[in-house]
Length: 259
Length: 206
Image 1 (cartoon, rainbow over the protein chains, first blue to last red):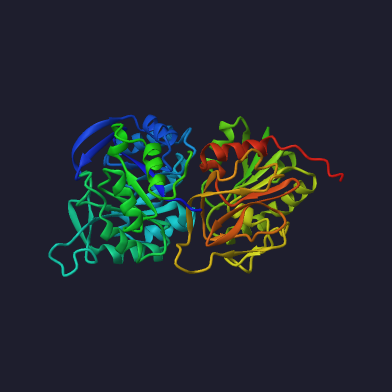
Image 2: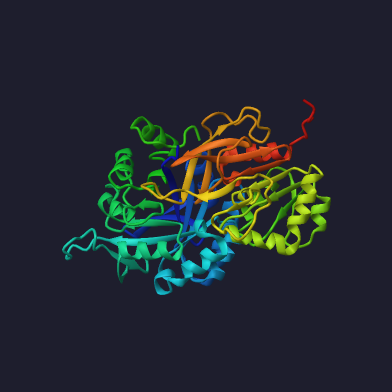
């Protein structure tokens, strides 16, 4: 039986894992390679490393970080943040990533999705969408808006429509982050996740707001998520992926155990 | 051990090479040169993406060289599209023949409520006499990402279930294939790759 995936996310800046609350108030959480290995050992089904560094030196540090992190990691490993071209993607793959996550660059030039997919396969392309409900709209969920530049600027697109276009262009998965919920540990945005998951035929990874086991059961059931991503609840030892999955299994969610 | 990994430009080889090195093998990569295949002790054909990419194997003469190596009893492992290539063909690229080492055709998962591609960790039901999957316990999980699959036949070494039962692994003598990614399947995947590297020909007398 196909299981629901629990994905551990590392936000990395200048080679260190950091964690913010609603994209600000950043604090240090450790070495990416060490943390990735720990998460994999503790049962994470996949590791995502999101780079939030924008400088050239930062890019070289990132490639080095990817290489170091990938070295002894034998679960799927995705890398995102600042991938602007097929060449950027290629470098990240060569450094050992299995998937790249594209966000702003794909919004500026959607053919980037087609190009990377053609060279490396659809399974290697994750389209990350930073989403925020639109409280002014008639349907705040269906009309949720895409944001770029770390959530600072509206992309002027609806989330559901962009997810569909990404799929049509050959994305293998959607990584949907609720900016309203990110870092709050108040739960995933299940309505928004369901709206996207029901609109596309490819897997949707829910992100933003993980705090308790119930949040995960909720996003898998009500949110129809195929996978759920969390960062801070793992970093600070609140919960390991294994203990989370043991509780999920008790709640009737199909997960990979023992892992 | 000389493990030759074949690069036919269908995706990234880094993860496969990394896993083989981690297990103590010394993989070399060839994309057109046939001489490494003639000297190989093991051949691995990875591959993700579109079945049409296997056309390059025919164009470079690799198909012929692989067929000859298989006839010399060199253990061969196809991964993902590399497994599908062992069959007669795939509905993904009907004009492109496979190796036809196994007679069946690969087809897309049927449309329905379930998502396609099949992405994630799924459990294996392995045949008890499989050498490749020796010591893989019932219900161990491996990582899949694919939209096309091979049917269950007499040569199926493990079944996985998604929408319908399909061949997660195939094995007949020295020729093996896995639909999942052992290089991304944690300890279970490493165990399977270790079995492949340690594969010894079984007596065929019976």
